[in-house]
Length: 213
Image (cartoon, rainbow, N blue to C red; front, side, top):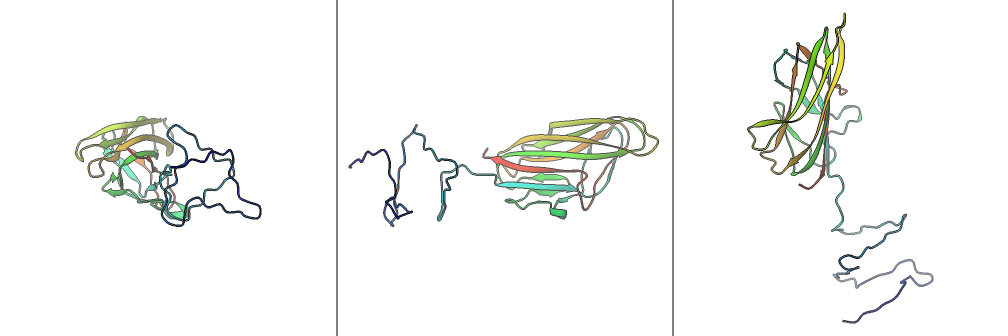
C-alpha cells in the first residue's frame, strides 16, 4: 500500500468540490486511534446518504399534563391519576420520538436509556397543612415501587383558598421497558387538592431520553 504525505489538500482553481474515493463503495479512514480531526467553526457536514458513527442527539422528549383536579385525603399516600399528553396550545407531547405510555397513573418508557423526568404539581387548600409530600416512585421489576425522588412543601392558614407547588425530578435508568416504570404519589398532612386542567398544564411533567443506558 502506497502512502502520500502532504501538509494541505485543496481544490484546484475554479472547482468547489473535491472527491475522495470512487463512486463505488469505499471506506475512507481519516486519522487513527488517538488522533483529533478538527472541524472549523462554520463548516457544514452535509449528509446526502446515511451518516454513522456520530453521537446521537436527543431522540425522545414527551410532555404530560394532569387533566383533572384530584382531592387527596390527609396522611394518605395516593396515586396521582388523570393524565394525557400535552398537545394543546403548542405543547409537544409525543412529538419527538416515541412517547411514553400511561395506564392508571403508571408510566412506561418506549425505549431503554437514561431518562430525565422533571415534574411539578400545583396544590390548593382552604387552610393550613404542615406538609405536602410528592413522591416519584420507580419499579425495576414491574411490581415493587420505591421512592427515587421526593418533593415537599407546606401551606400556611388562609381565610380563602391558598395555592402552592411541589416538584420532583430524577434520572431514571431504564434497562428494560417491560419492568422499569414510574408513578407519582402524593401525601398531604390535611386534605389537599392537586390541580389539573384540560388545556394548560397546572400539574405535569416532561420526560427526555438523554442517552443509552
